[in-house]
Amino acid sequence: MMSWYFRAPASIQSAALSVYGYRLQKIRRGGEHAAILSDILQSQWWDEDRLAALQCSLVNDLLGSAKTVPFLQDRGISSYKIETISDIRHLPFTTKDDLRQSEEQITSRSNVKTKVVDLNTGGTTGTPLKIFADTAALRRNYAFFDRLRVWAGVQEGSTATFAGRTIVNPSQSKPPYWRYNRAAKTLLCSSYHLGPKSAPAYLDELSKFAPALIDSYPSAIEVLARAQLSYGKSLVRPKAIITSAETLHPEVREMITEAFQCPIFDYYGATEMAAFISQCEYGSYHVNPEFGVVEILDGDRPVDAGELGEVVATGFCNHRMPLIRYRTGDLASWHSDTCQCGRAFRVISKIEGRMDDIIVTPDGRHVGRLDPIFKSTLGLLETRITQDRLDHLLIEAVQTDEFTTSAREKLLSELQNRVGPEVTLDFVAVTEFERTSRGKFRSVVSLI
Ligand SMILES: [Zn+2]
Image (cartoon, rainbow, N blue to C red):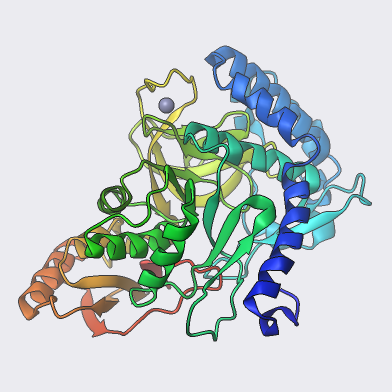
C-alpha cells in the first residue's frame, strides 16, 4: 500500500480503494473475462471424453508457451507433445525450488513487453514464491471464481471480503476495521484485526452492509460465527459463504453453517493458479478440468481412490509462467463416486492440508488432522500446535474460564495417544496469536 494511505482518514482510504478497485475490476473482469465465463458455464455440462479432449489441447497450448521459458527449455520441453491426456505423466515435474530462480528463468520470453504483475504466495515457512502473471491469466482465473459464485447462487450482489491485503493500519486499535470498495460493491474487512474482542463490531457493520456473499478464510469466519452464536440471534445472514486457503474442518463448517444459516462453498485455488477445486451445490469438491489437470501422486505413482497423495497440478490460466506438473505439497485423495449435480468433473474426497502441516512422530508415522480434538474441547478459542523437534510439541491456546484442569488433562492425553509416548507435550496459555502477514492462521506448524 502507498505510504500516505495509512495516514489518511477512513473515508479517503475508502475512496482510494474504490479507484484502485475500479482499475482492479477492469483488469480482473474486463476484456475476455465475460466470454470465458460464458464458455465455462457451458463446458461444465460436457461429458468426460469431451472434457478430456479439451484438456489435451489446452496442455499442448501450454507446452507451446513453455518452450519459451528458459528453465523448461533446459529440460527439453520443446520435444514434448501429448496425444491423450494420460500422456501428461511423461512430462517433467516442476518443484517449488524451481520457482525460486530468477524471473527471466521461470517466465515466458515471448511478448515480454506485456504488463506482468507479481503475486506473492505469502508462505509462512521458507522464501515466499513469486508468481508472475499477465492480465489474461488474471481474467481467466477470475472467470473460475465467478463460476463458483454462480454455483453458490450469488453471481450478482454485494460481497464482504476478509482480505489478505493490509487495508487498515495494523496499529489501529478501534473500529472501523473495514473499508468500502464501491466499484465492486465490496466491504473489505481486515482479518488482521479480527479476534473474539473485536468480532461484535464487525458483526454490527456486516449487518448494516447485508452482503449476499462473505468471502473469507475459514479461521476468520469461524471467529465471527462464534460471536454470532453467542448473541443467540442472526445479525448477519448472507446467501452464501465462500471459503478458501485453509483446511475447512467438518466441525468448523457445521458451526459456521449453524451461525449464518447458509451454505458454504469451499475451494482450493492458491496464488500459483495451478488448480481450482471447488464445491458444487451438492458439497462435492470438483476438480475444474478447464482450469488445469490435477494428478494425485505418491512419488510418481498415481494413487488409487481413497489413498492419500500429493496434488500435482498443471494450470492452463497462466501462460506467462507455465506451471507444468507442479508439486504443490498439498495432500488429497480421490473419491470414487460421481456427483449428483451431473457434472463429469472428478471428485476429491478431501484435501488434507499441507504436507508440512503434518506431524511426524519419532517412529516415522505421519499424523494429520490433529486440531479437531482441540475444536471439540470446551473453553478453547484458538490453538496452535508447533512441532519444533521430532520428540516435542508446543501447544499454545487462547482459553476461557470454561477450560478446566480436567479438560486440559483429557486433551493432552488424547493428543499423547495420537502422537505416542516418545513425544513430550508442553501446554502454554496465550492471550492471542499473531496472524501471518496475509491474516492466515495456521493451527499446526511443523518446523522440522
Ligand atoms: Zn457436484
